[in-house]
Amino acid sequence: MKVLGLSAFYHDSAAALVVDGDIVAAAHEERFTRKKHDPAFPGHAIRACLAIGGLGLRDLDAVVYYEKPGIKFGRLLATHASLAPRGYSSFEAAMRVWLGGKLFLRRELTAALAAIDDRFRPDRLKFSDHHMSHAASAFYPSPFERAVILTCDGVGEWTTTSLGLGEGHRIRMDRVLHFPHSLGLLYSAFTAYCGFRVNSGEYKLMGLAPYGTPRYAADIRRHLIDVAGDGSFRLNPRFFDYCVGRSMTTRAFDDLWGRPPLEPGGVPDEVILDLAASIQQVTEEVLALIVADAMRTYGRLPLVMAGGVALNCVANGRLLSDGLVDRIWIQPAAGDAGGALGAALAYAADRGGPVRPAAGTDSMKGCALGPSYSDAEIEAALVQPGLSVEVMSGEDALTRAAAADLAEGKAVGWHQGRSEFGPRALGGRSILADPRSATMQTDLNLKIKFRESFRPFAPSVLAEDCADWFELSHPSPYMLLVAAVRDSRRLTPSAEDAALRGLDRRRVRRSLIPAVTHVDNSARVQTIHRETSPLYHALVSRFRDLTGCPLVVNTSFNVRGEPIVETPGDALRCFLGTRIDRLYVGRYRLAKENQPDHLKVSYVDQVEKD
Figure 1: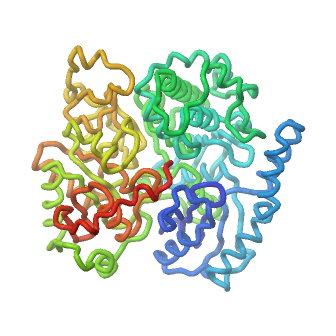
Figure 2: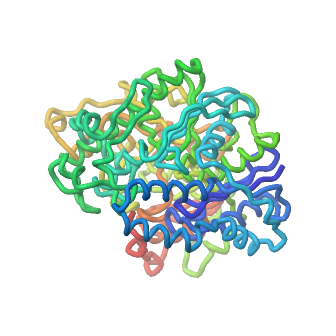
Figure 3: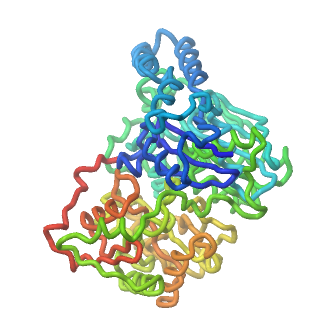
């Protein structure tokens, strides 16, 4: 059975191709259009997936859209009707969008698909439920034959949170929470209030949280969210305007904290830092209650998760470290992009097709599901007049040279193999650096990524060495678990350093790997496995041989506000426009100091800030 899944027209459009249960390809539209969180019809991603699979649209058994727009439109009407006449201007604007095309999505999708292949049959276009798409994306690629399924996001059609059970080829969702009561929208409300953009800045809020203290957590519980013992909850509508308004919160929300929201780009003060810490704590508490109740209900089974809230890797790590679960697997593309994959898998499973991986493995292939590029394509991008390019003799020479560059403190652009599906760079489209450097975090943020100085970086650690450096014995191949740095790898701050407060704390050297150690002595860990990432594993092994350190800094290959690079040309542009020292694309190596100055052109000002 050949099924293509699609997500589009909200944010993070994507396509995924599943053939007889094998995830053949998956890609984000933004990687090709270079528009971050691009919501457009994923024509480029579809073509890329079909090319990887050697198929045309006419060859498919179905194309499945990840949600049901008619039900979503019904929720919009019902919500505005219940609150009328409040929110009329918002309703009018929404009607223009829906009546202008979204209400007739089947027709729009059919026309767009026919433009790719005029022999596409319209009757093969199907629709899935939003949270069933999330649930399928979480369970079917997971390594578990039986597992508790938790999905949690802003909102799908009506559902914001769902809980159920996956067994073999069957999924049963037993409990749901409905809009407007949403943990994802609650977190997004604080994201907006703290000066970040909704649907892209939530991970910034998570990164800001360790700098504050959760002194407002009790106020959030008292005024904003009423939580039951099983984790079900209700939000207080007096403080939120997202149902029918043009903002996330009301004036009452501002008054609760005694100050207006932080302007975008503003410097977080003590109140903002403490609000970030507080909403992070409350989010962790709610998820912990839901999971604890699920373990009582279904038995102590593995847990799988999807939906945007599942990208909160701090909360995920707490579920493990607090002993609420023994085994956990989170869909690496947990947001709407992953809904494309889940839609395809849900359809195949519903029709009896194979969707389960071999027992004990996951079927995401290390997330290396996007396009790769031939030597000829790489040469066409890199071998240009004026550029100095070295051709490495093989993978052994490649990893030796790159490891030596890293050990010398160089920032390395690493573009190898297939691009990753999901929001994380996992060693295919990464910027790598030495985690032992005390200045690397600041240098990468300000000179290469051009982003906020507080933003943390993740370590990629050899799986076999992970437990020696972090309090984590569980695999974390997709960088979705935060764990503490081992005491033996920590350093004791001086009295002067210990007295620092707020963002000044980022300057403190807390461990032997300061570039990846958060202010609370934790790290967002990616474990590197030889089976799924052989070249990346070989590189970090070489670095370990040189330095005794079995991990590197890994951050996405892009600048702030830009999608992760896709093509060799994208990688070259980022290399020349930033202070990345070395570029490795396939077997080709470029050193920054050997390139002519007139080609080193910054493009950062052309990128819309996120």
